[in-house]
Image 1: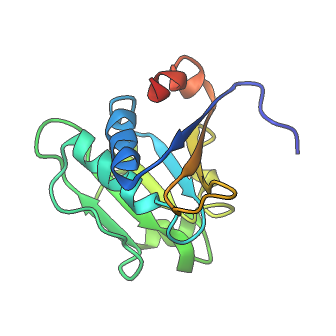
Image 2: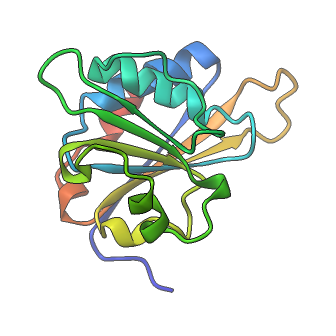
Image 3: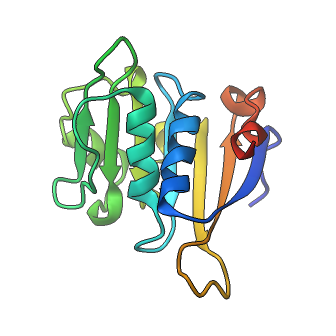
Length: 167
């Protein structure tokens, strides 16, 4: 499968949960309604920690916790920003149809959607998405260091300066 022509990518190293949260807060400033963020990484990699920072950066209501058992959680905005829809697709088998069946009581185009474990399940929502892959650094003895790769797919991300996140 060849990569789309219009994709931007940046990688950065995160050395603590606090930094992961801060990355989420900075990333939130780049997001707007209709954005789909797909998070992947093994258990404990920091997906929910990153999403917690996103929620803080977007200024949404409610503590961001892993939605594993409810599958999806909607965090309404406290101000005039978009709501954050946090989805854990780990137990979703059917992808988009199943997502719509969740009846999230929110319009996906008017929300920022963050999906954990969404590979092969939610890509059909939109061709334009931000893929965030979190890897534990090889040989890291403290178990805190992560390599985070952000890939923006589609025209929406072509003009976004993802490299600014590592500043």
